[in-house]
Image (spheres, rainbow, N blue to C red):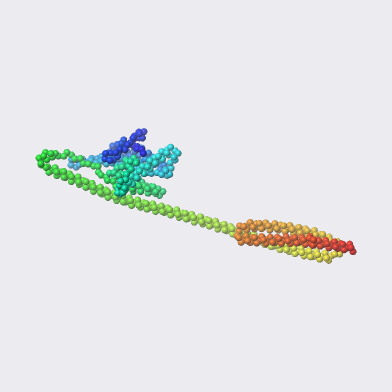
Length: 474
């Protein structure tokens, strides 16, 4: 820690060496400190402003014009009042220390960049400020315990900091001390405000024992040596002294009564201030609770809004799925209808083919005598039948392709639908497979009946050959 004279201007302000010395009466004073005579309040204010301009300030993250040091301004008053009778003087002396303590700072909230040279100096200043305030807090705590008759033999660490050593008389000596705590009305600084109030509350528990430093100097006392030697006493002189003593006792009583009234008024004002501070804390707590409840309600509203949007999204998706399922069912029904119509037409065509085969067989049996014409007709019939079977086979192939494409589409769509749709499509697929297999079997049977060893063409050929052989033999 360094001491600096704020009333010394120019380059010599840093060079002036200040030492804290002990007084004969047990107090302390700063040797080398500038003292100036003032005669009015304007002179005092001028010196305060002059010292304020010399004070060290700096910009931090918390404050643009932050105090980088503690400031102490001392006013010493010397007065003399002549007594009414003019036989003496009433001398009095007093000191008023006005101390502006720099606020404690947290390294995180100060936001000093340790890589910059100026930030290193700011960090050192912050550490010195916090160290001196910590020592001041320890001194206040021990003095409060001693005032409450606890830990009476504890050592008071005045010498651990220059700040506490300079304020030794004000903290635990013969002076009256008033602590003014500056707090912020913002809810964001509630922790700092509570800490400051606890600091001031601890200081209020200290009990000092102030005494008056006034004295009375009387004029020349009458010489009673001759009268004493002769054994005579001047009664009038004794009466005069008694009157003076009564007069001074009256003044002392009036002064004590005035002090008592001032003390009562101060206590009343202090009680009002404490009540106002309690009300302020209650209002701040209510405001904090209201803001907390408001935030909670906002969270609930946001949650409900999000749930409502999610429900609307789910409802919209369910409607889309329902429409898709409806379309799939309609397409399935249409496919079933078309497949049923094609199967019926195929069956009727097969019945016609069977009827034609019966007619051809009867015709062959009834016309054996015209074998050449019948053979020509049989050959023509064979060609027509082959063309017809080719058409039927191509129709079956296209039908099988359509069925397979319909099956694949139905399977792709059915996988996204409900389990009942999947089961229905599976059953449909199985039915279509059975129909396809039946169609293939019928086709193969028809081919076998027409072109096989025992088919129509073979029978006609055999019959023709037998007829020709019979005709040749005859």
